Image 1 (spheres, rainbow, N blue to C red):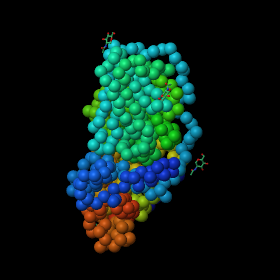
Image 2 (image 1 turned 45 degrees about the vertical axis):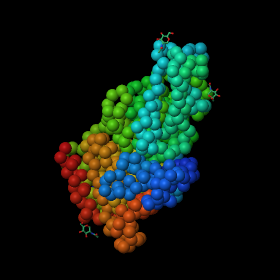
Image 3 (image 1 turned 120 degrees about the vertical axis):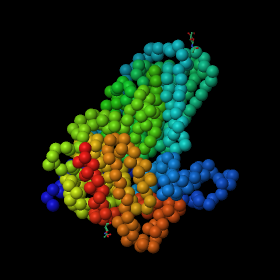
Image 4 (image 1 turned 90 degrees about the horizontal axis):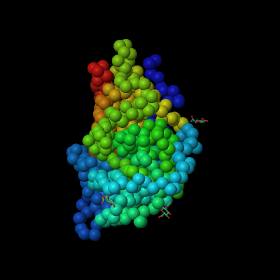
Length: 505
Ligand SMILES: *[C@@H]1O[C@H](CO)[C@@H](O)[C@H](O)[C@H]1NC(C)=O
Ligand SMILES: *[C@@H]1O[C@H](CO)[C@@H](O)[C@H](O)[C@H]1NC(C)=O
Ligand SMILES: *[C@@H]1O[C@H](CO)[C@@H](O)[C@H](O)[C@H]1NC(C)=O
Ligand SMILES: *[C@@H]1O[C@H](CO)[C@@H](O)[C@H](O)[C@H]1NC(C)=O
C-alpha cells in the first residue's frame, strides 16, 4: 500500500518523551518501596495503631478495586497515576540528551539594587492558601500578596506586614503539585512585625510564581499535566510580566531548555534558580506552588484573574510554536491524516503495519511515529499538528494530542483488564476540553499478550476485578505490561467513527 508512509527519522512523536532520566530512577525506586500498598490486605482491620499512611493507601486501594463499577474517586485516580509512575520498569528508562543541553535559561546575575525598599503598602497584605488538593494528595498552594520577600537559600517566602499584625503564621508548601514527592518544601511565613523582615537586595515590581522541578517531570504527560498547564493557569493573567522562581532545577536541568519557548511565552524574563539565589527578592505578589485542578485540563472558573479553558491553553501552544493548523483538513479529495503512536517498551502494538493498513482502508493517510533520541519539542509539535488523528495505546505518548488541530480526534486504546476508568481519567476530559473528539477502544482478552502468556483460565483474563482487588502492584504488572495484537475487524468501526467525525465538520 503505497500511501503508508512511515514518518521519517527526524520526526519523533513520542518515544523520547516517554523516557525519563536515570538520574531519578534511584529515588523513584526508593519511593516505590516506601509507598507500596501491597502488604495491606483488604480485610485488614481498622484497628487503632494502623499507620495513617497505610490506612490511606488501603482506602484508596479499595476504591480503585471497584473502579470497574465506575465509582473510584478522583483521589484514587490521582493516587493511581502517582503509583503508576513509580512502577515503571527501570530497564525501559534511558537517558536522552536534549539539543543544546548546556544552554541555560537561568538568570546568571541580577542588578543589585541594595537601597531600594519596596513601596510600603498601607495594609498588611495577605496569604491565601488553597487546600482543595489535600484530599487528592495534591499539593497546596499559597498566594501571598503585599510586601513579599523571598530567600532562595532558605527556600522561604515571607509576608512583611505594614504594621504589627495579629499573628505569625507558617505554611509548608511543596513546589511540585503531585503529592508524595521528596522536593524540599517552601516555607511561607506571615510575619508579625517588620523588624523581623530580611532587607530587600532586589526589588521587582512584577509578581512571581514559584515552582519546583521534580516528581514525574520528564514524562511527557506529567510535563503537561503537572507543570505546563498549571503554570499557564497561574501566570497567563500577567501577560508575560511575571518572574518564574524555580527550585530543584538540578533534578532535570534540560526541562527548562526543552520547554523554553512555552516558558518564554508566559514570562518575558529569565528564570531565577532559587537554590542558587543569594538575594532577598521583594515582590508585590508571589504564588507559591502550582495548582492541579484536574488531570490534563483546566477548570475555567478556578483560574485566577478570569476564566481560561484547555482550548485557550492549546491555542497558546499553537501560537507559541507557530503551529499552522487550527482546524482539520477540509479540502475535498485530501485524506485526513492519522498518526499511530509507537511504543518501545510495554503496551506495544504487535501488528502496527496491520493497524496502519486498516486506517488506510478507513480512508486515512496513516503514518507511524518513530522514536527519535534528539527530539525537539517544537519540531515534534509541528509534526503532530500536521495530523488530524492521534491513535495510541494508553500512555504518555497520547499527550501529543495537545498539538492536534481542534476538531481532530484522539483514539485511546485501553489495555485489557477493566482499565477504562483509569485510562479515561488521564485523557478523556482533557481531550474533549481541547476541542478534540475523544474515542476509546477497549482491548478484548483475545487481543492481549496476557492471553498467550497466562492462558484463558488465569484470573487476570477471567476476572479482572479480582486483580484490582488484590492491589495496585498486580494491576501494574499485569495490565500495564501487556502488549496488543489489535483485531482490525473489531477495531474498524472505531476508525470509521473517527473518519466520520472529521467529515461531518
Ligand atoms: C498602618 O499604619 C499606618 C500609619 O502608621 C496607617 O495609616 C495604616 O492605616 C495602618 N494599616 C493598618 C492595616 O493598620
Ligand atoms: C537566607 O536565609 C538563610 C537561612 O535562614 C540565611 O542564612 C541567609 O542570610 C538569608 N539570606 C539573606 C540574603 O538574607
Ligand atoms: C543526535 O544529534 C547528534 C548531534 O547533532 C548526532 O551526532 C547524533 O547522531 C544524533 N543522534 C540520533 C540518534 O539521531
Ligand atoms: C476479530 O473480531 C471479529 C469481530 O468482532 C470477530 O468476528 C473475529 O472472530 C475476531 N478475530 C479473531 C482472530 O479473534
